[in-house]
Image (tube, rainbow, N blue to C red; front, side, top):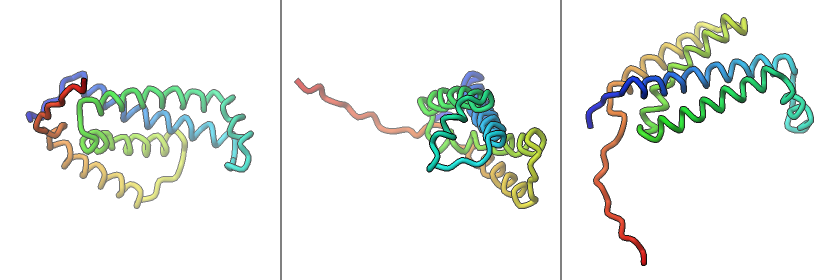
Length: 139
């Protein structure tokens, strides 16, 4: 199979990367404002749903999920997940500069390794060719 991605498909992959990264960052902001919660106190988690940051994060993550499902409809998961792993770079940058978190050298090294791995995956085909199987209709 020829490995060509249309501009629309590239856009879907970018939407997956940005959707997951921004959605997670918004959830991170909301949960930092809320403070620690546990599964023993589900009321606190329900209270979190009143936060505009949490609601925004959930909405963005719903867009991510729609984009992710779209990408999986035309490409293998072994292509989509690594190809969108560049989102880890975006998350790290958002964490450092928007959330003002400390990012250690080892985390930056990990992000660099992910980017290198993405380069290997991006050179392969996006979909595995399978022989077509005829399915008989059951009367």
